[in-house]
Image 1 (cartoon, rainbow, N blue to C red):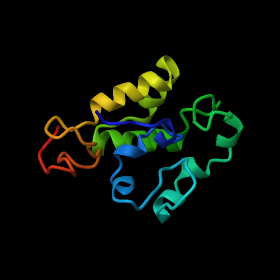
Image 2: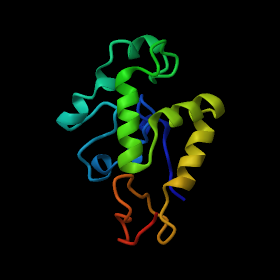
Image 3: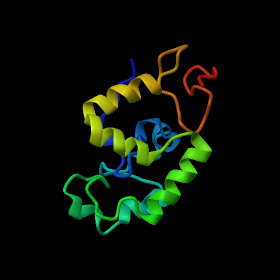
Length: 132
């Protein structure tokens, strides 16, 4: 089964483990220190001055949630990839990180080869078969 790790859940709720940029080695994830492409370095959520005040490392607990920027981001990710950062944050808040990660493991594994799939593609990067 796919192993999901809490440190790879971005502050906005996205799972960096299933992001193509992470999978090809161009990024270490949004929250861990390390390399990131320019578009990730300029992400509003990563650069949000209020984020540090939440003490959780997540947008959860922010009095501005959902802010205009995360609503826009949520709409884009839902339209393009069928993923909702706001729904993910809600699941984390409601059930805890461990339960959320267990759900993510079931959601993002390839039924053919059991590898981690990619949210940007309906084709498994490991075996090349459709997984959605």
